[in-house]
Length: 47
Length: 288
Image: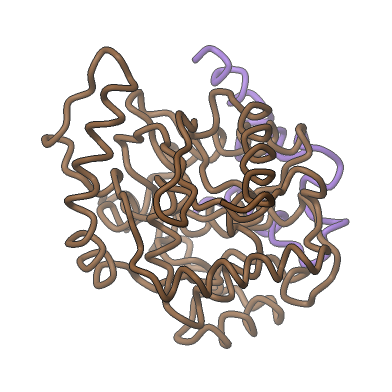
């Protein structure tokens, strides 16, 4: 598993929902380095 | 049919109208059979991710990234409509004919916590899974999608499940059918009907096989800690479940998995995650 993947999982598995990734909107998940800082989602939009 | 059921049907239909879009499995028709209210759902030829993980064990990171990204977009869409899925897991994530992700079982029906608990205790996960293609209407859920607070609602679910246990379950399981059996017609509705009929024949045998095939039935692996603690919860529970699933997609087993349901709960509450040996696992992942 890549370090970025592990970091994303750890951020999502924060026991405190107010501090969990996504608490400040979906963009903080999309912008996570695992998705190459949102780049990945731009490509998806082309679907 | 009771008045409150008709009322529920109308409400659920409203939810379906609200969320009709690219990221959810569509409902074509509703009909009644004996005491059941049934939903005829879009046929998802790609099957669900529980089956995919069974076949492929785990996914390459680049492959997982694509599906996870689509799941994120789908969840964001649901959240923007004020709908919380609450029961996100690989079984509820399906692939359509073009290979794109669609969610099902989204906060409707018995997707609430009560349903999940029941599954663990009575090993009725297979029933939930069959609900993927045929929904039995129980909850009007578009009023307070963010919290399970309404006691009446929970009672209603309980009652529903009790009734279901006693009766023979009429089940369709199109996701389990060999694709060779069916050909998609130009008119989707005709196709759906064929699917339904074939599914009905197949359902009894597949349900048996399915039970043996499935890892842990009605697993609580994806439940956020705030739900277990009984705290008020909202859309953040879906992002938790997403984290569990990313781990599972990459490592093949969900992070809090254990031998018993109680141990899984304990692991979630204690936040006990066993991280794979980074080198070893990416090596294994590359093999597949």
